[in-house]
Image (cartoon, rainbow, N blue to C red; front, side):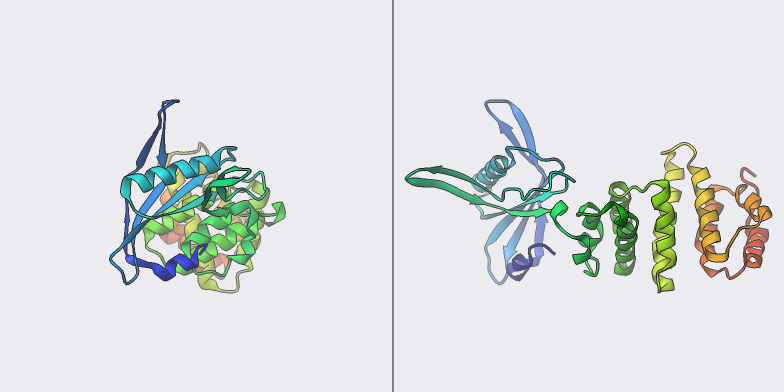
Length: 292
């Protein structure tokens, strides 16, 4: 997505990920790890090279020097060419960050080291919304986003993820990233639900809401947040209201008595409802009071 030229000479089936590379700063005694180091073969050749990707979650004044140190030690240890990439995910500052490290004198440039940079806060999420790439669905959550666009961006991330048809493990991993880095307020959540309702494709709508439902289930299973079940009740009732209109009091009361598992099942079933009679029928056949 960010370095298409590399794809033209990298043999995809040859990629292997190396163990964490540990580096020690001898003077300071500090130990650091290179984030991701992969070994790949040049396409059509028997020679290899390394790809080093370093993720930076906050701005660091001396980061360019650290990138060079990692490069030098990887190059020395493996005796292979190294393609260095910096992935910058912090929200600020938004200035254009360096993409190299130089050692120069007035009469001589001793070192001119360059590395690729993906600076997410300087990228526009709209440029990636139609790319069929799981990396796009995840990293859009950290790109430059206007405050009013946050609910829409989260929807677009999930819509894209739902259309990719990845296996459950990858879907779970990427959706968790999106939810972590685009956590919405209550008002933004309401707008997110309204955006879901505008999706023209029923299939896309169902795919997005299945991911949202899986978040609710996971949150309850792990006990990550006290009162999460109340949030699940509220979300299901909002979904019903968006789909069918004002929810009758008796249905509200029945929903608040459902177990976590029943709430998840109702969240999946409500896409097929066309009236509150369908809801009542589902509750009669599937619901037992929570705890029984």
